Image (cartoon, rainbow, N blue to C red; front, side, top):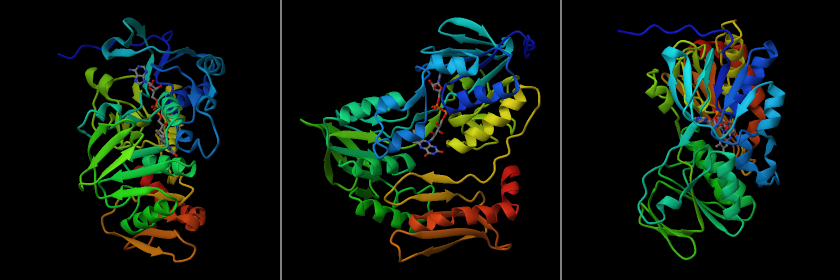
Amino acid sequence: MTRPVLPATQTDPVVIVGTGLGGYTVARELRKFDPQTPVIVVSRDDGSFYSKPALSNALAMKRAPHDLASFDAEEMAAQLGARVWTHRHVERIVPDEHVIVVDGQRQPYRALVLATGADPRRVPVEGDGACDVRSINDLGDYIRFREALASCRSVAILGAGLIGCEFANDLVAAGHAVSLIDPAGVPLSRLLPAEAGAVFSRALSDAGVDVRLGCGVTAVSRREPGYLLTLTDGNVLDADIVVSATGLVPRTALAKEAGLRVEAGISTDAWCRTSAPDIYALGDCAAIEGRVQPYVLPIMHAARALARTLCGTPTRVDFPVMPVVVKTPAVPAVVVAPLLPDGRGMVEAPLQDPPHAVRAVCEDVVTRRVTGFALLGAATAEKAALLKQMTSSGYDQERAVS
Ligand SMILES: Cc1cc2nc3c(=O)[nH]c(=O)nc-3n(C[C@H](O)[C@H](O)[C@H](O)COP(=O)(O)OP(=O)(O)OC[C@H]3O[C@@H](n4cnc5c(N)ncnc54)[C@H](O)[C@@H]3O)c2cc1C
């Protein structure tokens, strides 16, 4: 028998779990409409506000890790008119009672927003150095990485996705020896068509990155100093530091244990509503209408809509066309991945001059409307024109509802 859900009282606060982009942006947007409602933002980290994308180009931007946080938790609390609880761990949600348990203490909520982010995915690696392989998924990780880097020269990066490629470019430009290793045949294999990926790979190599594609890492063994990596193609290589950048797994454990529906992430409808009353989710932890979109723009759109919903005006998240910008100065890239690849052709036109320029446009084979694109190097100048085409043809509206 399902238990009745206790109605939340109006005096209970809106509780937001997470002080990343998702959590803080909801709080900020909420305050635009509602200066009164009590808001508590809970985080297991120190609650400082920083731009996570800035981690992977901080060397190029000449930014010291400790300068990356723009506001500490106290300043955020003052700005938001909220209580910000730092170094506190949300252990449990009791949806039927509208309560969360934070470090053993019960905290009632009127509405609960889960913005708990994602954990780095780790691929299994053998060897006594496997536990020293680092991930860089928040400012704390990055501060520790930069401390280690101060006395090191070479870095091996496992995974040539967006984050691996950005770190590779940033490190090589700062004078480090970088190896970038990925089992796929091209970098950014989930974003770029193969031919564009090959050009991207060449550009990273030309910039000095040792790009090892089509092979993985089986073992990381300690040496004095550094590590020896054994690759699946039988080769070995040395590195002072090993970084894993093999993707993210949405943090769903809290939601799952509370009985909320979880698929690719915490499942929500287009209003960020989970399967439990008055519990919402957004950001890297959430699958909004089945899609996890771990990028800044989707989070900002979701936060704006959710803030209105929390203020009593239920508002759908309508995602426009949102390009992903890859911060690799050696070969800048902009991608809008087509939503529906079936029946649609990718028209590729790699340009000879200037080097590393690629224009790859995906069109609907019937209507010839642009449904996605990938631009590299000088071709990124076409971004605005292609976005305009997608918008004026109404394709962005179709994406919003599909
Ligand atoms: C190096 C790097 C570069 C990136 N570059 C780009 C880019 O160029 N463009 C782009 O669009 N995107 C980029 N991204 C992705 C983007 O930064 C993320 O999608 C976004 O920052 C995620 O925000 P979030 O609020 O969902 O999660 P997070 O920022 O991870 O925040 C999660 C929060 O939840 C808290 N938390 C989790 N569990 C609990 C618990 N049980 N109790 C209490 N607190 C909890 C954590 O302490 C944290 O405060 C990049 C990501 C990385 C790592």
